[in-house]
Image (cartoon, rainbow over all chains, first blue to last red; front, side, top):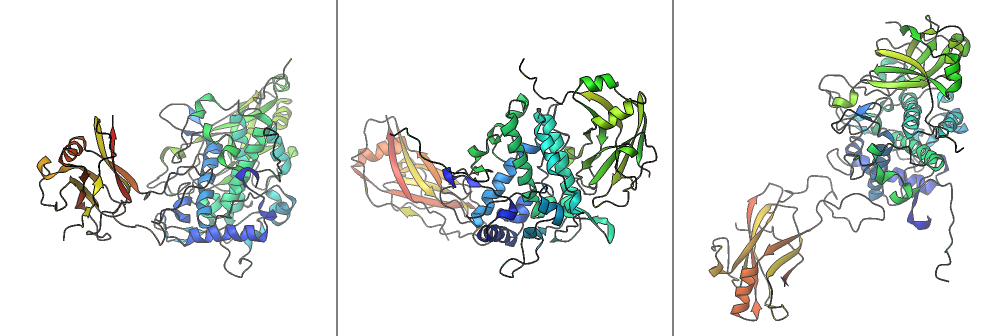
Length: 277
Length: 143
Length: 151
């Protein structure tokens, strides 16, 4: 797109070639063994098991008593690195967001791109499930998903209400709750075995499920929309220099998505200016 | 284990709720080590359970969600990331209703597994709750 | 079997500024994917080998060291060094991006200049640590060398 920025789209609006590129990138990553730093298991493993780099509620850090909540900037950095890693396998791929507030989601639940058992060419759909390594004595397997009733997904009104929150810390807390709700909804509980839940429902294993990434792109987009309305001035000064380990980025580095090379505009056009006239 | 009850939780006055922008119910010490669940919060309904309709008539104030780590405590690799957390629920209307009839309320929290249905015993651990009126942090409009 | 050494063609030193306080021998595009080794650099001693004393009289100019990756520990393509990063890619370069090594060789270059207008550079690698995954003979690979002086 214009300016060389990657355009992240909603998953249901992907053209067939775009969806094929995403599936191609994911499938190639899933084919690598877990110790290969291009692999699905390697990159999902940054979030929960085995590395637990992710930031969620109530995490203290940096050797002081203040509680930081770097949930939004950390996941923005994570998505950025992950998307470039996918594009190493298929340069045409970009990670779409899943709008769980849409009418379609509230009717059908998980989008077809993530729930169809096969891709357009009849091959297994790599967006349906992802590989999980052996964990604490459990053998390697594929992810599980037991999504809840579609009408229990968060609504557009709930997201709209977040836009009026003027404090970044407050907004982070509230959007994180919607985020938590969708994780629980998407993972769900096995109706045949209440002791078994879907992987999206647990921090330890959620990133192995392909829908994790599109859920987080939706969260990142909501933050972007909030930034347009509210700016960045309410981010605590103490946050700005904090590193988003293990990525070579700080909070300040990830505040402008165009500086990071992507955009969420539904569409854009551009024209040359007159500075050379 | 039954849903968790906190009795005689002081309420802000109706005047303070009106003066502030909203009322918040805040829980401390919410454990996030185990599975994920929805925590439904009811005011002045000590008998609320998983089958209680989440409506204003039944004292429903709203829900918060716990996105748990989902791993066993043995050999916990997540370390300090799993320390108990603070969670807050914006519940202005429910708190206003409760404050209209008294200066304290019973807060009942009903944990429910994802997908709804049966209550999840032993899921919710929280060591305290407070209810307060607060500004939502929005910038003060220019005069 | 000893690792293979490198001997340069004859290099003219005429273009060098003779009034220098420091002279370096730079090695560009050095492969570090295999064994770890010391690379001893000799001027005007094309016959130098692992047994040659590292003395000025032997033309010894200094050494550089490679801390090798020990072979490819990944699936097919894991060790392929990719091209220039795409725009906005914040990730560091591929770990096997070839290295640049610099040997400060002021005295040796000055001595070589005193011997004549031309010089040969011999690089004698000696493996310090290898694994079963690496070639222990053909360890030294680099794109080019340069002799650089500074006033």
